[in-house]
Length: 110
Image (cartoon, rainbow, N blue to C red; front, side):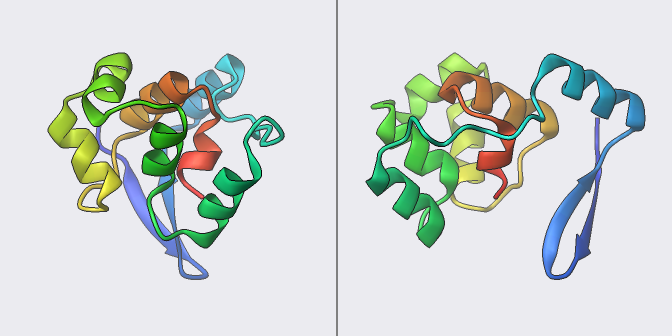
């Protein structure tokens, strides 16, 4: 399914149907992530935004792109495109990646 992307205050936002939002909220996918279990250097790397959050968290978890892609049931080339910013990734793909990395989706899109 395709979603609309809109920008507000210079930040991109994804518009999804309300019923999908409610389903994701019910599953706990949209809850704010607890960052307390991440080491200080990972938090600094996420804050610096020099690399995509997925790449930072993937490396922290000791996963290769192929291992994460397999765990998230997406293709490695698609994961690479998301990590390099060539593609935003679908809501479904980001949900799968977040679950594979054991973080909330909000960390991946910050």
